[in-house]
Each structure stands twice: as structure tokens, then as C-alpha cells.
Amino acid sequence: MWTREELDRYARHMVLPGVGAAGQARLKQHSVLVVGAGGLGVPVLQYLVAAGVGRIGIVEMDRVDRSNLQRQVLYGVQDIGRTKAEVAQERLEVLNPHVQIVTYPIRLDSANALEVLRPYDLILDCSDNFPTRYLVNDACVLLDKPLVYGAIHQFEGQVSVFHYRGGPCYRCLYPTPPKPGTIPNCAEAGVFGVLPGVVGSLMASEALKILLGLGQVLSGRLLLYDGLEPAFRTLHLERNPACLVCGDSPTVLELQNYEVFCGVDA
Image (tube, rainbow, N blue to C red; front, side, top):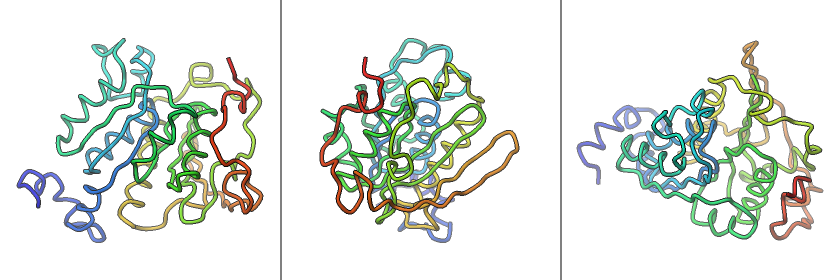
């Protein structure tokens, strides 16, 4: 049953071919977990909340820093020092009070990942480090959940959908992590301020398509974006039968210590 306010809010969706009232009801019934509420997580959260996804979880333990404000447009100067999860929940509940926001102001690790991810239909990896990416991928495969992935670097970004209807997982694309120090993070390399908005919007689009059953999902494909050209390229991916996680004879049957796996153990 829709309220008058909801009918007005979602009017442009409800007249859209392929969505309609039935599709909007599907969004309302679904749940999504967003890992990371930074550069990529901010636009992802804003668009999924605005679209009316029924329940959205946010995993984020960091606090707002002044350097975030160049690209993480959900936060303001007055939020510096506050936890991102708390601020994000406040702003998103104002954006759409019909969406349930659940926050996890914790460090996601092998001990808690399965418990945190299990209640959600779809996972979006908006993290910025390799241990978390491998952790989230492996947890999604073990829980049999689709994963929307995005990453950014300076002026470039990439988006894909992993473990979707028998498609490849993140480890099929990157079987082993890069050596520590070979790929600088945003603080070291910098990032074009609008780039997370572009890549995050593409991730939100893939998430909505999956939830609605619309169009062609980026499973088995890696979408590359170069903001300086500007240009998009698409690479074809295939599931690796020898993949240690999603292959025909997987050997990774439980979550590992991913800091050690990625060579960044403190």
C-alpha cells in the first residue's frame, strides 16, 4: 500500500517502462549493504536511498576528515570529526524517511563479515583497500550473494558485477593482490573530485538493474572509465574454473586473514 507522499516521490519511476508500481514495490522489499561510505559509497547511498530501496546497511568506521570534503558531498565542515556512519544516516533519513538505514560503525573482518552480509540481498563494495575487497568477494561467494564492485584511481575508474548467476568473481579477475606499495592510495596519488560521483552512479545503476531485473548487468564485463579522454571501454571477463573461491573445485571454504593475504599485516 502506497502513501500519497510515496506516490508523489516515486512518480517518475512508476511511469517508467520496465519499472512501474510493481518494480518500485520490489525495490521497497529489497535490502542492500554498502561497504564503505567514502568517495564511492556517498553517491551509491544517495541514489539507492532516493530510489526507495527498502533497507540499506552502511559499513563504515572512519570519521569525517577535511580532506574528504573535496569529493564526499554528503558531508560538510560541521561534520569534521564525527563518524561517517552517523552523519550518513542522519542525511539519508532526511533524503528519504521511507528507507530503513542500518549502520555498522565497525571494521569489517573475517570474524564478522558473514554475519554482517548475510541479511542483505545485494552487496556493494565501495571500499578503498585490497584486504576488504578480497574479504567482501569471498564472503559473497560463500553466502551466494551478487556483488557490485567499483574502484577509482586518480582520473580513472572501473565497475563490474561479480558472482551473479554463475558469473566470475573478483578473484577470477585478480587472483592475487598486488605487492604492497605498488598501487598508491588516494591520499598518496590523489583523486579527481568528481570521479567518485561518476563511478558511484554507475554502481548504483547496476544495483538497481539487478534488483529490478532490468537490462544487461555488468556480469562478465569490466567497465573502464577514463575521465581525461573522456572514454569508456568494456573488457570481457570469464569465470575461472580454477578459481580458488568460485571455481569447480574451490579450496577457500572459509574466510581468511586478508591483511596477511595482501601482505599488509600490521
